[in-house]
Image (tube, rainbow, N blue to C red; front, side, top):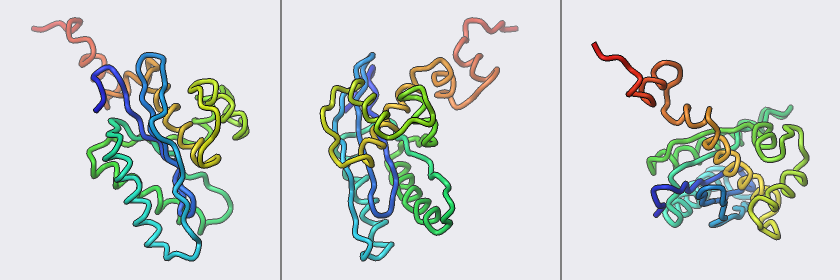
Length: 190
């Protein structure tokens, strides 16, 4: 169970054949990796079996590590519409599982993740991995780039939550609503 001043964040890189996942614990500036890996499924399995396996795996990781935040990479639209639809199904199953556990879901584009980790939204996967190694101290990437992409999503979420704008967004309201809620002593009462 997470202490009150630490975040436990689950990151997902969705896919119907290979899905990356990670869970990190963040306290102050320290990021610790709790788990990181991939779920690899065969192309020969029925698509609904694969979706069920995605749900089971995410459910097990959530039950084991008890994250209090859930971040997922948004599907990247290429030219293959069928691939996009399959990826959307995998993402939907992952989101449904997180919601079933009462976790709020935040989605990040691949470009946003790269920008948060390296400062360059067009960085190569190798550059992202090298920066993640420096940030977390991990030596090797278990599960290949799918797992490291999931780690990147979790770290991106942490950085977004730490930023002043991320703190404002945590309250689910923006503008005056958020200002009033976050500054009750500055509101004149009549």
